[in-house]
Length: 392
Image 1 (tube, rainbow, N blue to C red):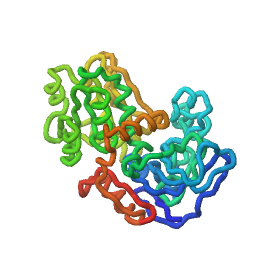
Image 2: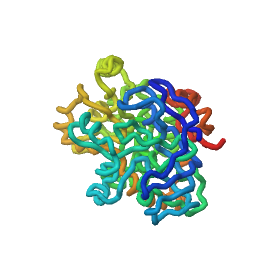
Image 3: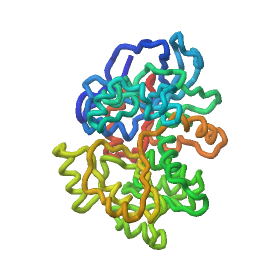
């Protein structure tokens, strides 16, 4: 089959690789009908996530048709149309039972690698996202093996198009959980979202779905800010105005009640802190550039929430913990517990409350994907979200 593979820092390619096979009786094989490039994939392209190996199949946003099931799979059958969450969960460990699916104890066979980096703890496995997260083949391919298929295969039984449900695999639940973590008081609270990329766009719309009185989007690309404004958000271009001053002015001097950092480890910015971040990251002294997180802390109102769907990779410094402490901020973060959000968000799509396909700007084949990885990373051609057809 064809697949997009990691070939080294700043290099991905399309290769012919062996078709996946059932390895365990709880597995299924899915013929992928739609897949996407995620902003998190760019951290792999740029070489900031350790334990990638040449030939690793990329991709964690995908859906398709079940073509084979293991003998212990009871909830899925051949022919079912499914979306598959990006994180792999067993469904029976204590964390999964509590709904903390991304913290699954049983889905990461390489948990010791993550424990060594993160201080004795490990999240669950993730498709196509390094050997530290299990070494699973990803879904930017024509077929994929789905472990724990009864837990991770969510049937789509309506006639909704792929593009309307594909993002239930990651960015819609991720943006929604980021807003949910803010405990928004309907009709009162103001939410600021740093980063108007795909996750940020869904965080903006999710904040409004949860009753936010006002949402403010911070970015530097006009097309992203225009998309945020189309959802009703106020736009701030941080290259054209002082973002901290602008946020205070927009909130009567208080600051936003809640701030969502939908940027993560490769934040752009200006000032001495941003310059030091760039230098340290270039020398591989740190994984992370923290401009968006610093702005989030400094702008948030007293007693507010800083919600982090943006991915961070390691130890950080130059973080204004004094300000966070003085304000009494609450931090909520982590990989999305995608499984618990799929069907509630599918119901919102079916009810016409949101059509997630709004975020798509580019459609392509797998063969075009290597160029589009860089187009997406470099924000060329108005690129916000890329969807791939593996059979085009």
